[in-house]
Length: 396
Image 1 (cartoon, rainbow, N blue to C red):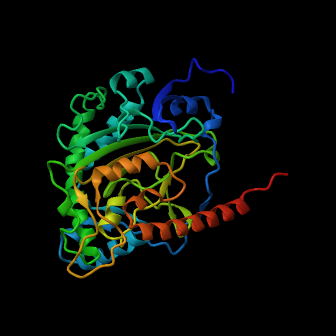
Image 2: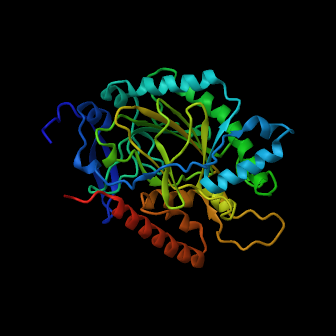
């Protein structure tokens, strides 16, 4: 690659290496690379191919209006249970969020990423913490790690005062924080409703999951993701495969609707997610609380060659000091998961990610169950790799 340092800006990502030493890595800003139509070697990987969505796929949106009413509520709960168990995620419609609020979210997000790099950096800091808040990169653990084709901004919107003393909210656009906090306040009500609906959908008391949340100490982390056009979408990923360190994650996307993919039945499928709906992802904490009856999804973000894509993710998390475990509904259950403290789980989650398989959740499984799960995961991962190798074009 020719020397283009004068037109490429860099993020500085800090990480602790295998020797326990703090290292700093310079990562080129993908907006600059997109403008130059350049894909550096450290962004190149061989993503597993995406399979066509089966013709009989049932991924209908969950109608929040029906969940709130009497007519059709029972059938909507059954649909919620089916889609959640099959996909680990679902879309929602008739959620009641003000369209103007959502439009303002889009405007301030695009407004921030349209700023020159130096203005973005002067407006927002970067903090090496469990959440890697601010403007920059996260989940970077080594110099030879393949990088994601993404620019991101992260902050903590709850509990109140969580970001006091930190420069994580953009000063430009001037109304950025006001708009996002208004959206988060309204979205929290939807998330609380969904926690209750999911519990009822799998025949638990409606407060089984929501009992671990409260207004004063529960966390809502915000992550804004920007995926500019990529010169070689076949050789890059927007976000490495992962699960979410949350109970539920609420996602808003705009500009494009084809970037999110989920691993289902050992196949990567593009999620049928129209831009006019919101998507809810099941996180690791729901898997733990439901004793595995609901599974967190293994998902990734792809890149596209000619389209910008933005997403805004709200990660809904119980208080850091809260101890959670499988919810008992009066009947004895064979517990596959043990009790964990939320903050301790998240420290482990950020320490081990990224991983090739769904490894973080093993922290919450009983030792014997975790051992069997790892063996099964490795076998499934090997099978996927072998199938993928056979599908790749052979060199001439």
